[in-house]
Image (cartoon, rainbow over all chains, first blue to last red; front, side, top):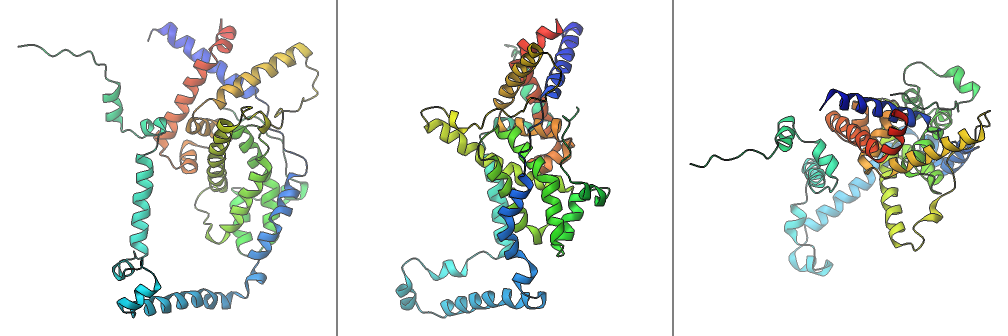
Length: 149
Length: 212
């Protein structure tokens, strides 16, 4: 790029920054904070320690549904094939036994996140994630000729 | 880059007790420990910034206030899981951009389906005249330029627009922007660079008339 082009480019970027600085800040609607507080009041009331019960009891309230779930799992595990059929055709024993434990679930979630990155259609994000070497190769001009023997 | 000046929205009492460093993180920790007044301080300090960021990203759509409320509802639901490992604004803005990205997609689908192209989405102009002593012609020119610049920003891909807005108007570092958007610092740098190049192209008429 010629020095004059560089200088012009720098001037244009400086002008762009000035235009962006000139943009007025969005105006906050009057009373916004009060309305947000009012709208979130019921959610906060449900989260309040008093509403949740004393801290000492919290482990009990967490343990009870877990214990119930564990009991159900044991009950299903003890069922024979005919009983399972009675529950419905879609509860094969091997699937119940193979349900992922938490670490397995986490690994699968990580794979899912990587998959979402792979299938993203945001070209800018994909290009931005290229390694430096890959980016150089991508930008290499296709003007190399193969010598004919 | 210089952030556009933001009006001070905190009340006098909040300013008086605001600690140095990261007040938002301190208030979140206090609130999680049971100090309900700390949540009120969070809302008063940050609701304006959240609303402003949503406005810059989505434009003056009617859902902004609902989305602002939703941001704080999500804050409430994540209260027990909050860890002050980064600046509070990084955590807050991550919530904002997740919501904004979903809303942007919904708006896009609605505009595609709508016969009148989404004109009913707008609340009207973002800005209120500042009542300065500026000459009317100069003010009209300034407003026309602002409209053109906003349209150019709106035409950017979502990822570029988000990176540019956070870098330019929220004074976040590249690393912090990366934490908000779930990208590497290198990717953020590239996005900001691309955004500025695209704006330089789309606003060429405005830039060259001033440079010449």
